[in-house]
Image (cartoon, rainbow, N blue to C red; front, top):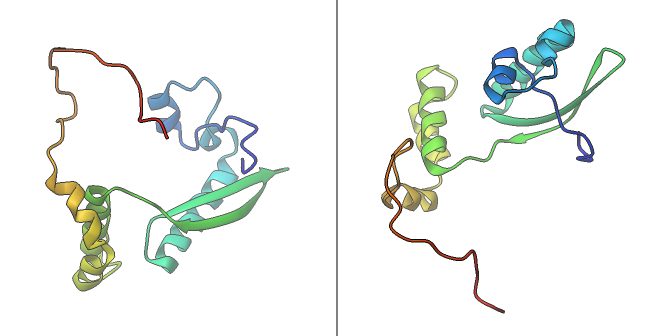
Length: 132
């Protein structure tokens, strides 16, 4: 919902299960609207040649696309998406290289904690920021 006054339901059944959602997914609740959304989203991503963030609503069984824009992502994700799109033949390798903003590559040069790392706590701190 654009107004942010409702908690959105999961679109896919695997997404609902992964998030632990109790309400039925769009895929289960409105299979026709779900199929239409899949078709429209694939068409938009092909047209724009990029992953899209899409806002939509369904009223009385009719899908309404409200807006779409290129999806924002971290440098590693941008690189993966660009490589995947090149591998799928959606864009050329040259276009994939251009897609990744060189300024964001700095993010990939900094050390990160491996997902799932089980370390031990060596201290604690207060959530604080400098005063203005």
